[in-house]
Each structure stands twice: as structure tokens, then as C-alpha cells.
Image (cartoon, rainbow, N blue to C red; front, side, top):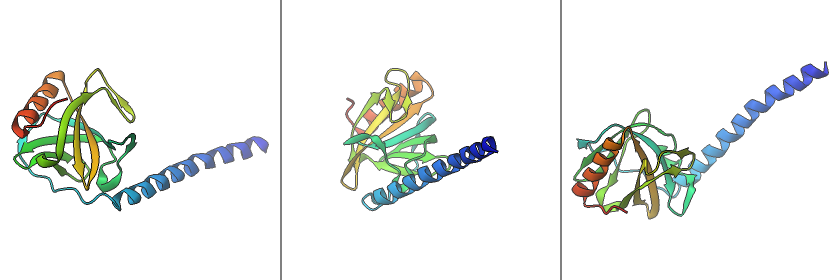
Length: 162
């Protein structure tokens, strides 16, 4: 009987932890959405190589993921560049554009929140939205596509690379 009771309690712990995590993320998303305005709509432009959307974080707090406006989940993305900025169309999530006027700089990095890759394997886009400095991380499938995307963005949008 004791063994069954311990097993039953252990089985209750897993859903309880999942509920706590869900509630915490939902609360954080609502708090962030109160200060982060809706993102600019996706503008189709010249397609860049397929990539993965890894994360968007606060520049002032790079270990805090932005959950507002659907920016939290990672996944496949199609990035395109137009006169208005950098469009990111994500599978299963809302697509958005990072306006070229709000992009501060572009760089590379090796890690973000919970993802580490080879040296300089992430493309980091530093930008401002709603008066808040953000960093969006993208990962391209190969070093050649990463370099092509970096070159295209810096030349077409006139963004500095750091």
C-alpha cells in the first residue's frame, strides 16, 4: 500500500509542475504584452536561406526570453528582406517585420538562453520596439547560408556589423 501511495504522489507531481510552468509563462507573457506593442506586419521581400528562429531576448536581460506577441517559441522560419525591413515568417506562429529603421546592429553569437551552437553560429539582430531594446537570434542551416544572409542584410539595409 505504501508503494502505491508513493507512486500516486509521484504521478501527481508531474502535472502539477507542468501547470506551474504554464501559469508562470502565461503571467510573464501578459506582463510583457502590457509594455510591448503589437509587432509590425510581415512584409514579403527577397527570400534569404531557410533558418530557425531561436529566440528574442531583452538586451538589458539576455537570459530573459520575450514571450509577448508570440515571440517565445522557437521554430522554422523564412526570412525575407525588403525596403521596409527584415521579415520573419515562422511556422505555426505570427509573422512579423523588424523595421530597418529600428535595427541597431547585426552580429554573431555562439549562445542564447538555452541554445549553444558552434562559434558564431547564430545571427544576432539588435533592434528597438516600443522603446525596448531587443535581440533576435536566427540560425541558418550552413555557414555559407549564414554568411549570405549576413552580407545581404548589411548591404541592403545598410546595417553595421559588430
